[in-house]
Length: 220
Length: 242
Ligand SMILES: Nc1ncnc2c1ncn2[C@@H]1O[C@H](COP(=O)(O)OP(=O)(O)OP(=O)(O)O)[C@@H](O)[C@H]1O
Ligand SMILES: [Mg+2]
Image (cartoon, rainbow over all chains, first blue to last red; front, top):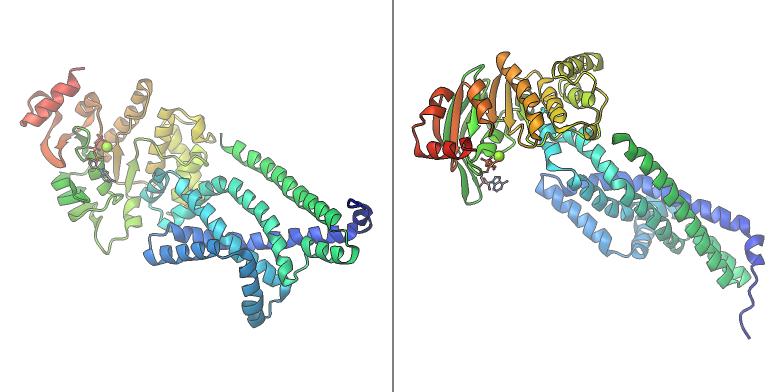
């Protein structure tokens, strides 16, 4: 006998999905917000003129790229989290931010390196310090370059954030898990969860594309 | 105004400048000419420390440019640099390109910087281009914006590295005119150029480089009619015969 679908579990529990989806967006957005400054600092460190700073930034990036997010979240929650009294919510956000920061750092690095060398030379020739040239000339141009990959990173982050359920942080995935445990409708619930993740990431793509167009159209 | 003393510079094992010494008096205009790979760009870039030197000394307006205690950012305010490919900031308008450094480096007020920036752009024939982005300007216009951007810092010295080489022929004149005007106003300038007619007309002295050395230095009247060195004769016969 085949599996009998019962999609009513979705409509009956819509509030659970909505609450979970909002939490997922909230956690991802906060993680991104903290991850961006981390990424800018580490990314600038990667192109720094100082060897030690370059090395430390590279270590950060390589370690974060090597460690599975799942393991990182568990470490942060059980080690750092207990020590700092973080709780699941902030533990999840911090873990995601530290993780995504490394990927943003690489995006920032390639954005900076993509700005033609002559831009730095022109800025320095006019008397700007390295820091001023970075801030007023290089980073604004790197910013335009990093927007598309940064947007992809946010989308990846939304999906990656489903792992925070392992430290019992409330999000779409944890709510779905709980719902499956009580309703035994795993196929329906997970299929719908996938759809919700897709709606979130796809609408984000559209929003970002819109802003990108507006920003780029300014300088032609 | 500019003193270059026994400067040596290598890229790895490749010596690009060998014992280069040169004096540029105030208000003089020097053309730096020579075959490709002679080290002209390298030399002019050492004058504002875009390129470090191995040894020797460079003094511009009393400041030792490569000195350990020199505040290079301050020294560069005094030295305008114009690049072959303009290097305008593509995300800023012409006026913003010109006012950026006065605002951020000199701490000028926005009104003062814009007033001066507009004056400069107008004097370079760009009075209708304040709000244009570089991407919308012709090469000649872009290079004039770049000249305005350098002049906005009120430098004592202007350096040009092949300012017209990236331009279509019909735009060369407008840029050379701008440089000529500066010469008449008494600006001290070093110009790397392949425009021999221009060099002859406005330069006080021609400096001929080959293989990282200054081979000959002479006023244009002498250099173009009767150069001392074989290398200069060879070079001139090549560039003047077409
Ligand atoms: N960053 C660099 N690294 C290694 N070698 C370099 C570098 N820049 C220049 N060179 C070498 O130094 C020599 C002098 O170069 P430079 O650009 O100063 O010549 P140039 O006289 O300006 O030539 P051109 O007329 O072609 O512009 C060349 O052999 C060049 O290959
Ligand atoms: Mg050159």
